[in-house]
Image (cartoon, rainbow, N blue to C red; front, side, top):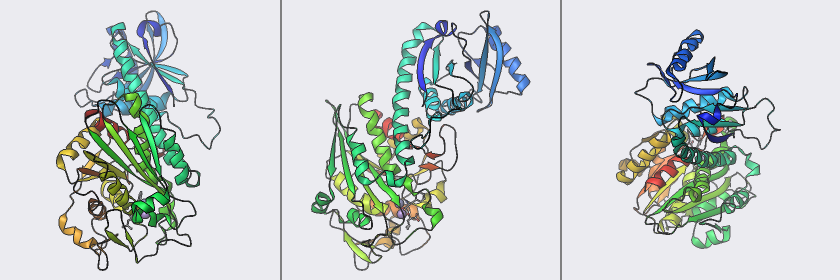
Length: 483
Ligand code: BES
Ligand code: MN
Ligand code: ZN
């Protein structure tokens, strides 16, 4: 990731670095501090490249500013009126990708939300490098947000700092998702979580033996097919003066082979991403202390592989979850709900005001909403409203699906309380997942986020390279900041 700095226009004028300025489709360059004649000149010259100021457009123009020749990078923002924070994030992403192989350092005269712009610049420059040599053709090392007036500098520094904390947290989650599945055993993930301890955060590891004593039979059943033991992590952030107590719960399947209900090869290719929910929880914890949020936060990550080893759970097996409910496992590939069931019961016992889970739970969510939008389900509309407001700020789209009570019949068991897949096949798979989880929250305020689509992308998008996206880290943080 590049560095984000802040400087003043006067100081920046001493450099010969290119300066990025933003332009609107419906007229004008937004570059306070530049003389109007120069702004006009930039637009005129950019027209030669057919630059219209549309969102995502970029043009490079030479012009002289205060007697010094300089490269300007014009970045389109689209229509002035429809510009939102997400538009600036995308523009920052486009600029970052454009500059990556061309310049060592760029200045950016911000327009609008500087934090969102900074997030876009940083997040788009992320690269997963654990298995690679240093990149030789990438040259961009820093972006300097330029304050037109000295009096803007402190505000921009605050925005840049926050963008840095957010981007670090997201990229921490991306790194974990992108890592090969054998390099992130549940125990290793426990160590990663322990690395977050300090400055108000404590980390408690619940061993398989303790989990057994607690009655987490549903969670443990998923781990039976793996040679690697599971690892349940409970993180606590407890600042002084906190008035609310919130739980974040993450699905942490470090690889989902499907178990004995084995997935076909193609469906397995990206299943290292099945711990993206837990990675989002850990990512949020990475930022909590530096943001100094005044809310008590508990994180619960249920890590395990889902493998078809010799002692694997067999279709037809009945297990008992921590709240006493019994589950007939008819498909070992519907394992996310099994680990979350116990994680949610464990969480409800902590006396939380609200809890949110994030899980790559169902392929049906990908079919319904695609790779941009996560499915949201809740037993508490007021809580969901707050989560949706946070997701809008973060530019991470959610769409609510109803927890249709009638569909619960499909997962009522014959020889057990519940079955882990519905008797009705091929219908409302994402809702079924949500209804199953609802049986384990004891009526407490809860939102379930099925992030199966947005968690992992096959190709590059606006401010995210291919692979893990770190989705929900920023939604969690915005939600916690507004609680
Ligand atoms: N981890 C998968 C869901 C998934 C699919 C995540 C695609 C990301 C991309 C989950 O454990 C799973 O296998 N779900 C099954 C449930 C079914 C057996 C009821 C599915 O969606 O097919
Ligand atoms: Mn599965
Ligand atoms: Zn899974």
